[in-house]
Image 1: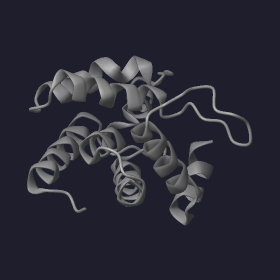
Image 2: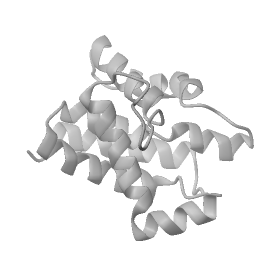
Image 3: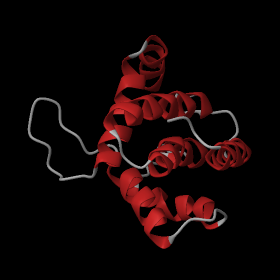
Length: 150
């Protein structure tokens, strides 16, 4: 199911805000990474289901903590980025429950384990954003991005 115009407008608005608030990053966690992760998440959602709005907004905002790290030259966890995430979400016409779900996906998107049982019992939207982010990291561009970041 393609994005409707309202969701496209939301994503465009969020991208503009991110580029304004966090000018070009060079650590690999930039608007291009966020956009590629979003595209992966949409493809996964088409096969797996889940709430497209929650997945899309979470995917485009999932690495705000990384953008904050470059800006402030200090470590931030996804949890520590939620106040900034809520600022972005406050200007959108979303319910409290939608905002809560987006924040939950972002908070937990880096909590995964390869080869072991997952420590959390997350909803489908979180798993989709986790997988979309990981798929982006293993692509050709993701490989270069990873090498530059580490």
